[in-house]
Amino acid sequence: MEKKNIDWGNLGFAYMQTDKRFVSNYKDGAWDDGAIISDATVSITECAGVFQYAQTCFEGLKAYTTEDGSIVCFRPDLNAERMKQSAERLEMPVFPKDRFIKAVIDTVKANEAWVPPYGSGATLYIRPNMNATGAVIGVKPADEYQFRIFVTPVGPYFKGGVKPLTLRICDFDRAAPHGTGHIKAGLNYAMSLHAIVDAHKAGFDENMFLDSATRTKVEETGGANFLFVTKDNKVVTPKSNSILPSITRRSLMVVAKDYLGLEVEEREIYKEELADFAECGLCGTAAVISPVGKINDHGKEICFPSGMTSMGPVTKKLYDTLTGIQMGRIKGPEGWVVKIS
Image (tube, rainbow, N blue to C red):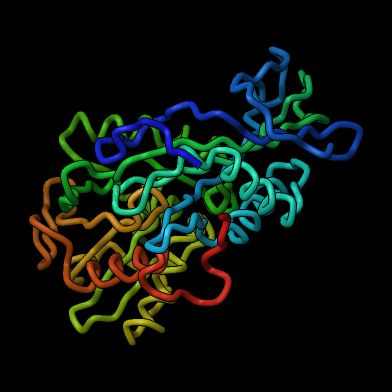
């Protein structure tokens, strides 16, 4: 298929409307067959549950053109499972895992001309989302829902190269114990918006949220998990029931252990430990790993030995290996890379 006439190498990380999207509606206790459609607009009642009580969840993954010209996506089964967990927690109907994966594949195929070519640095971002469309005025779950997948070509999250970030330890809370921090609900991101705007105004790139119960343990940022490297090259990530289980972070831990031969550990990480680490990064679909150079704790700076000019050596190996798997340069574990065409 002939590609769209786009300057692929200069794409930003922003929405660009593509030709097709997948839509399925839930009514009378069942999902319909769904279809690939052209209409990018959503028409629902003003009293829809998504507007009244924030019944909405979403996922994010990417499709890539590999070195041999194939189009693939990365671990969509985990996105399907995580959306299932989100839907269950929000009292929304689960969209079946097999149908989720098929819908992802069909939507990418329908927009094949929008998949950036290999070597461009760009990818096709895939956004599955589910919203309560049924009217509801009393505080209760809606009875009608829509599952939708749209795609958009995006450039690298960091234009002009990756530069280590400066974070601050945030006084706002992102999620409460026994709350919804572990699912990908839109309301979690709404909670973090004021904090990130406030951080930017103060000159910081991102926030480090601590656990809201004791404010002593590292959790995550508004949209990414943390990954740390000790001075003896152990890869450590925070453990908490209110952290979103990042697919990228889980994949990086496998890469660290099975590909790089490093010791890995998921455990509670206390704020007092931060100065003991050699490297720090943020893990997520958009940038894979974003290196962190320093963290500001209310005026006290914690500077990582990896510095403010580039990724630390272990973080760089993790990044190169995982992106190599995604782009087909390195053979990944069975089932990680799903071929679309």
